[in-house]
Each structure stands twice: as C-alpha cells, then as structure tokens.
Amino acid sequence: MKRFLVFIIPRILGSYFNVVALFSINKAGVLAMQTFAKVRRSQLRDGKNISLLEKAKRESIEVSGMDIQTYHWPGEKEAVLLLHGWESNTNRWRNLIQLMRKEGYDIYAIDAPAHGNSTGTYHLLPDYVEAAYQMTKKFNITHLIGHSMGGMAIFYLLYKHQNTSVSSFITLGAPADFSLIVSGYQRRVPFNARVYRSLDAQMKKLVDMDIVSFSSVHFAKHITQKALIMHDRSDQTIPHTQSIAVHNALSNSELVLTEKNGHSMHQAEVCEKILLFLSKN
View 1 (cartoon, rainbow, N blue to C red):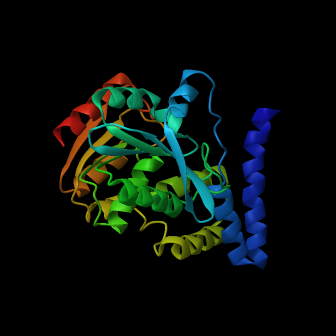
View 2: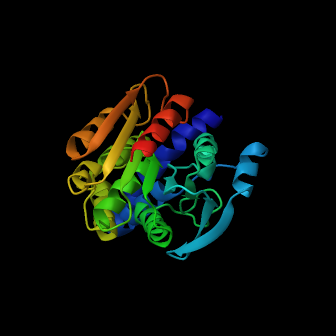
View 3: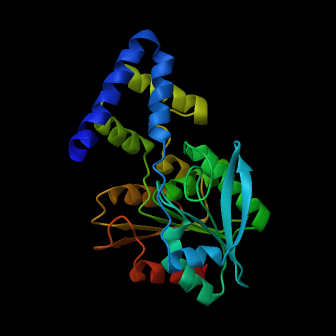
C-alpha cells in the first residue's frame, strides 16, 4: 500500500497542477514551486551524534522570517563554514567535524531553512545563500564546504557576492544545472509544458534567471577562488559529469573523482582529501 501511495500521489499532484493551469497559469506555477520546495525534515538521531551538536556554541540568525540555526566549534585556525544538502542537516558533517576539530579549525555550520533545527516550511536556495552570506560576513569565513545542494549554494553565493573573505571552497557531489533537478521533479510529479512555463516564470521572479540559466557552470566562470571539486563516479543521485562540467568552467580548481563512495561523500577517504586541501590553502 505504501509503495502504491508513493507512486500515485505525485501523479495526482501533477494532474492537479495541469487542471489548475487551465484556470490560472500563475497559480499553477506557485503550487508547483511550493511543492518542489516543501521539505521532508530529517530527524536528528540520539546518541553521540546529538552530543556533537550539543557541544557547539549555538545561535540563530534571521532570514526571510525564519530562524536559521547556527553552530560553532571554536579553533585557532582559519574559519570554515559547512553547508549540507537537501533534506539533511548539520549532523551529516559529524565525521569531518571531529577530524577538523583535532586539526584546530574554527568550524561553523548552519541548518538550511526548513532543515534540522532551523524553522520554515519551504527551502528556497536564495534564502540558504543569504544565511551563508551573513555567516561569511559576520565570522570572516575563509573556507566553504558544501555537499550536494549546499555545493550549488556556494557557487551562487560566490557569483552573487564576489567581494567576500572566502579564499577557497570544496564541493561534494554537487549539482551544476538546476534544470537537472527540475527535470527529476517533473518525472516524479508529471506536469505538462504549460505548468513548466509557469514554474519557470516563478524562478525568474525569485532569482532573475530562468531554470536553464541557473547553472553553476555559468556561475563558475565568474569565480576566482581556489576550489576542490569532488564527486563519486557511482553517484546515483547527481551524475559526476555535473562536477566535471563545473571544474572545466572554473579558472583555479582541482577535480577528484572517487569510487564507491556514492552520493553521501562522508567516508574517511573524502575527509582526508578535504583536510589535505585545507592544509595547502
């Protein structure tokens, strides 16, 4: 029954958007955007994982009426900001945080809007970027590290705010083309071209770019910071060719393609390469 509902509900939604578009094309686009941005909040697990978060200095910052949870593990080295991916939270960095603390880095992290301990219902990338930008300004962040959608947030941040304290960044399994994400959404929730055009119009209102134009490949051409671009060849969520395209567009980057780490990219091999990059930059 559960499997049947997982199959049928998105199709009902797609059909509903198509019907709404017959009467109000704008309303159909709004509904499609809201459904896309609605987050299934992941649960924080008990035990030592929570203990690590509780050891952090915790504050909140305000973005678009939402309280964004921030974390800080003080250290004497450069300041690093960690940005998690879609339907995740700061807890996903637990392996890396423990290793970075041993090395003495000044570690900051945030739960994205509507994720983890942050408030909100919808996750829109500009809000995530605004939260990250506030952190870079307030704490003089030197290095950015982002997983999946957090990596795309880094590209948009550095494109939109080119005069920052950031000197280098690392992305793990990050998408390059927003159109790839929307195409996946449209396959799950099959709506027609009329609804897509309306969703595209909502995108233009949000970021002054259409869905196809919103691409880290485009952003990368305007970014000068040193970068480490990591992706696993077996990633079934975001193809590794996305990172190859971004690497080719950047002026100062290193590309590392791993094997058998999947999309999560939290394994010891990945953490070691991150620490090595940070030590040299």
